[in-house]
Length: 148
Image (cartoon, rainbow, N blue to C red; front, side, top):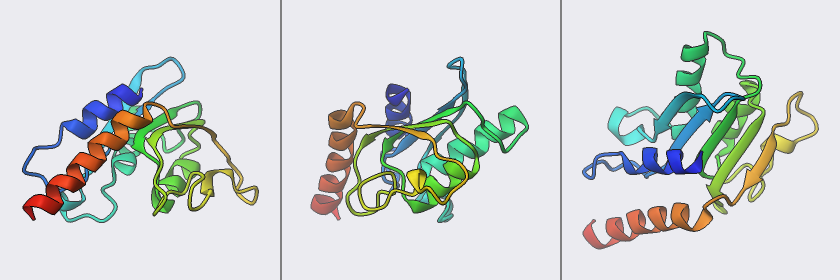
């Protein structure tokens, strides 16, 4: 799943200013329900994070906002908005690659998804293919610093 998310992250046009983050939602049988890559810069939409787009597309594919039994895989630890969205969508599991110590909300800076006050708490699998996910992001930001 993370390999699919990495492919999504890499699919953004090289001229895009969007951070290369990719996400995929699969059902319990492994069927891909929705994919996404960051589109904030491309669309001017502050909510166009890879995870939100993948969740929207998965909901459209299933005809339901409830994604019971689904797994969301993403290349970077979700932020508070995305963590909240996957909890509200009732995603069963979140799998992510690189940790985000500055904005992560699945264990590093915050832990929204395991907050006992919420009515749904997905399973978390962290650090899957962490190095390739982190390398992609580091390369993006290094390029931005040297060209921009």
